[in-house]
Amino acid sequence: MDMTNKRNKAVPLCHRNKSHVRTEIINTWDQCVAAGGDRIFISYTKPDSRACQPAHYNIIRIKNGRELKTDPGGAWYTYGRKQFLVGHPLRTHKPAALADAMQWVRRKYGARVFVCNRRRDYVEQDVNERYPIHKQKKHV
Image (cartoon, helix red, strand yellow):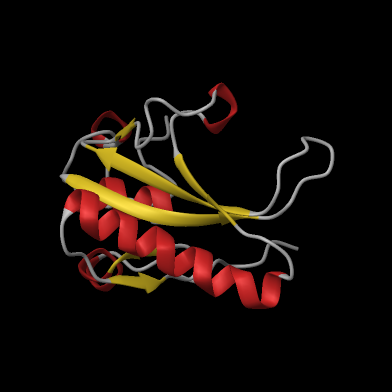
């Protein structure tokens, strides 16, 4: 009978969901959940012609592992996330949209310093320093 977890071989399977077990952080959501508390990150979404969505930045808020709406009065297709649209050309408008998004977060939720993580999302600096996203091994 296999009593070990593949990630932590010394940990019995019955303990794998306990809080003391270290989990691998592979994306921005994992970073924010691991940090705990009320966390915000800014994520870029490329333009999608099939969904008729332009390029935009999403403001995503996570509190105790659950996503909270940052724009409760927004359109249904934004899923309650505040969006900052990026105009054309992307080269000049993308930095401006990111600056607007960061400024909005600072006004709404207080002063926060954002840095770009390995997934190219913008997370709070302390979250990125304490819970970095590790480079993934390529499976052949």
